[in-house]
Amino acid sequence: MEPILIMTPALECTRVIVSRSMKELAEICDEGACLDEGRVVDASPMQSVIVGYQLRMGVAEPVNPAARA
Image (cartoon, rainbow, N blue to C red):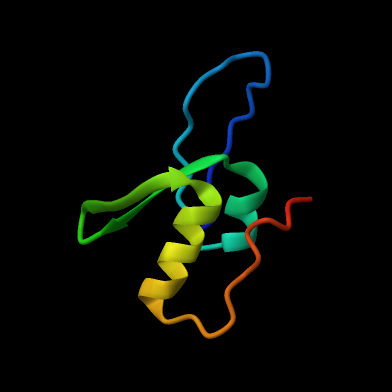
């Protein structure tokens, strides 16, 4: 599923982006949330959410979420 982005740089607003691309999320998001069976299990800075998600999913080699473009 490709995320739908509407960039509005002049406006301060919240955007909801759904993606499983850790690299993409790390590049465009400062804060994030992880849901499990419809419940929020983590809501914090994006780097922390990515690491927590990867640990829950048992990812052997986590993506470096700090590697922002």
